[in-house]
Image (cartoon, one colour):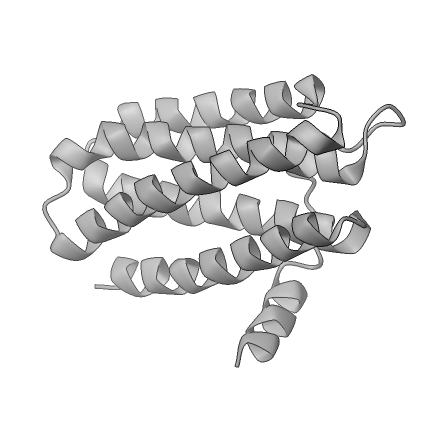
Length: 169
């Protein structure tokens, strides 16, 4: 089932044809670029969750938010540990993604229906994470980074499905 999901994901996203975040430069590796951008990406998600939580009335949406808070905070720790042995944070990748996340947070801040906007923006946010993970799966060589990218792509694809179903209510 997961292999079929991964194949469907790759086909539906066009193998990450939209570049989300900063590409690896000659001074950095795809691993460092992915991890650095994904840290900023996850930090943006955490900020959106903290902003939206007081307005989340639907128990399902609240559970998603709490899960995102827990899982993405944990993944940030894993990514920081991986970066420590890979040469440290790639500031260009981190800053590029931080700017994208600031814009997304601003959209949530200005939303009239924060609960619906949160789900819509998390769907968009997860799509970006999956795109970055697929890019890492295509270019990275470090096994731990590849495993993390695969886990992120699969978990967030499953959440995208749940978000889309919720939005159809």
